[in-house]
Structure formats: C-alpha cells, structure tokens
Length: 171
Image 1 (cartoon, rainbow, N blue to C red):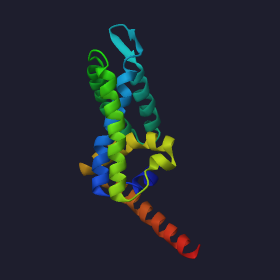
Image 2 (image 1 turned 180 degrees about the vertical axis):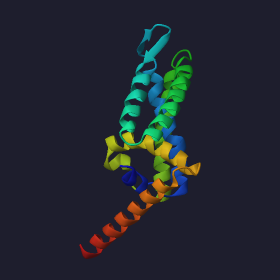
Image 3 (image 1 turned 90 degrees about the horizontal axis):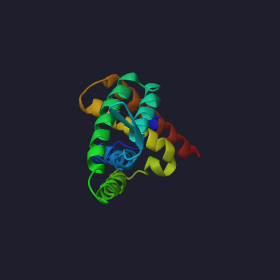
C-alpha cells in the first residue's frame, strides 16, 4: 500500500503540499465529528476520537511505531478540531469546509506539478486510508529516521516503473 501511494508522490512540491493538505483535510472532517459524542466520567468521547482510534488500530497492522506517531498527531488534531468547532454560529462549519476543500485543492495542485494522477481518483478508499499514514511516514523520512524502510520502498517503486515500462514497450 505504501509503495503504491508513494509512487504517485515523488516530487518534493507534491510531498510538501500533501504534508499540509492531508492534516488539513483530516481537520475538516474531525471538526463536525467532535460535535457528536457522549460523556464518560469527565472525559468526552466524540466520533472524532472513534475515527482516530479506528485508523490507529488499522495502522497497527502496518507498523507499530508509525501507528503510535499517528495516534499522537490524530489526538492533537482532534483537540484543535474541538476548539475550532466551538466557534459560534456557522463558523465551525465554514472552517471545516475550508479545511476539507482547501486541502483537496492543494493536493490536486501538487499532483498537477508532479504530472501524476491522484491516487484518490484511482482508489478513493485506499487513498483516504493511506494518506494519513503516508504523512507520518514522510515525517519520519524528513527526520532521517528508518531510512532502510524508505530505501526499500524506493527500490520497489523503481522496480515497478521498470516493469511497467517494459510491459508498455512490449505491449
């Protein structure tokens, strides 16, 4: 999953835009999800927490370290979502819509620069599951952590491109 997603995200500008756009889209989704929930003692459990927990559990099946890093970031985003969603009137909805649509517009611009089709068009469910994970992985890459993983993913991308180029040539 990571190799397929990363293959469409090789240009530095596209990666940069996704590093901002994906959390922004998540924030746009989390804001209205914070409005639905229930109290457990002094803690409020919202649908935003349930979504973050669901992603965390899925990511645990992929990589424990990345899953925990996502959980921390997701929880911080949910705290911000609560604050932004508490503004009076329709302000919370306007912020959520601006984050959601603005984040996607930015990503489409990134793909235009890279001249690649967004994974969202080809595989919308996979794209939405992989995108937050990809953001965490890219943060580790920027920090210079787990370089062996990135080298392996890049090798797989190059092998896939070589194979696809060969089949197109002979096809």
